[in-house]
Image (cartoon, rainbow, N blue to C red; front, side):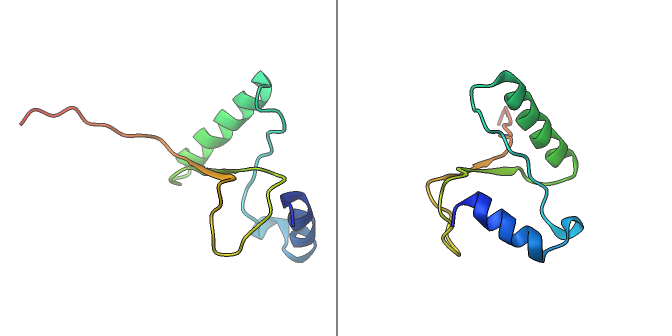
Length: 83
């Protein structure tokens, strides 16, 4: 099932306070949507999480597998060292 159908079914079964937080960004090119996504990522990182997973809303779910329609977004940490 696509995400929208899965979420509707899960919403009937799982109380909101037990669900994973989510943010929907319908238009990738929309500046306001981009700011909302950036704010969601920043808030998620502030809560101590590693990052977020971005998914295609129309993609089918395959249990136990992360498909090509999923993208993990997390900060990149680098160090400049002298040895």
